[in-house]
Length: 195
Picture 1 (cartoon, rainbow, N blue to C red):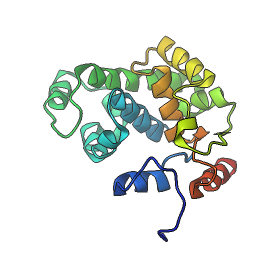
Picture 2 (picture 1 turned 60 degrees about the horizontal axis):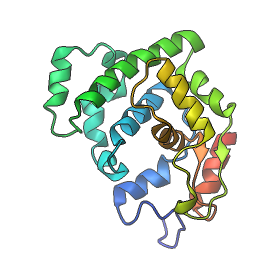
Picture 3 (picture 1 turned 180 degrees about the vertical axis):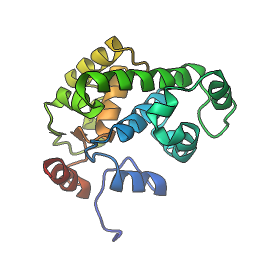
């Protein structure tokens, strides 16, 4: 990748953040396991920086059975204690409990809609919402769509899915393309959404 490439400013010089920006962020997700991964990571991000969570991503992957929600849904007291003692992740009792509950809630949604993917994309009518922002300061913390998503997820028993968390999740899962218009990924992610 040539150094002259223009990208969003938020990754800074952090190599892991740059890699995440260049390969993951804004790419439309249609796999329920990947959806679960982003739900988990964004819930744990609440009150923390994305950089902190990203640098623990592989630890979260190991701790939560490679984001296999079917396995996580069966976690009991033993697994809960193991997670509470895992220094590689964020040891927050409520967030760990929420992750196990969210795995069960995701499976309930699958029963109703056939897949979590079919359910979650209905909030954007199955299309990626493409922003025309020029700088990070223009990115909203939440929107009417994330408000509606948050409300519905909470109604279905999901935890740590406030509107701001939902919006961050939408960005990660490519439901929203918030790459700056002059970022090389803006067009690429928009193209992937149409594929």
